[in-house]
Length: 194
Image 1 (tube, one colour):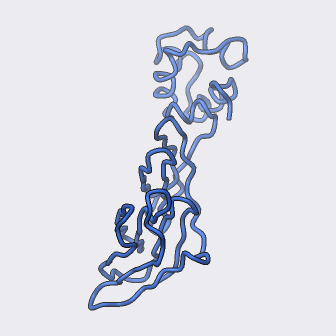
Image 2 (image 1 turned 90 degrees about the horizontal axis):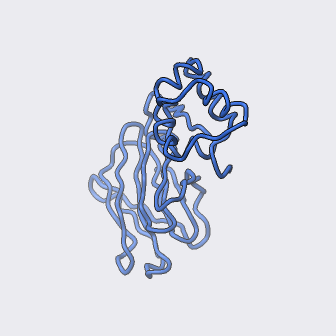
Image 3 (image 1 turned 180 degrees about the horizontal axis):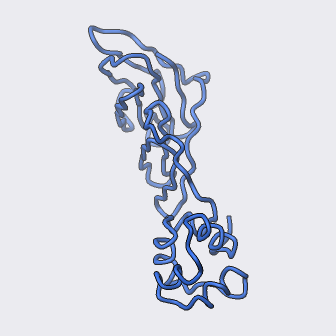
């Protein structure tokens, strides 16, 4: 990750959206010569211009600074392709229908990759009436716990937030075939098909 916006990032994104240097310059109220200097590495945009520059280039400030532009390839919004992000500082959970660029507590969050259940993280799924009853014999201490369960089908996501000292269990109304995901604050995201 670069510590500041790079010449290549500005030029590449400007060309992708079809702007000339003059058009970009007019949007952020600088000269086209300034944009030319940024794109050739002979200067850098002032910090006060980073947010307007990101808006003009239709990216987030985080994407502009790191040089990695996220594109949602799940345009059909298939919920099974949902992505989860968790902040390691505050525990904030972010659900997105597709990949994106999300920050929390000053950290650019990576998308969580779900793994098959590992030893010590196997869930039990029982059908009780019209619900899945999901339970997991797992520590629920302040330093080690299951943060959430999620049930994801083609068109539905149900997220249940859990807290330390609570039982690691929940119920989901059965909505068809899908996956159940669960997140351990120490070991990451796991999944199983139902």
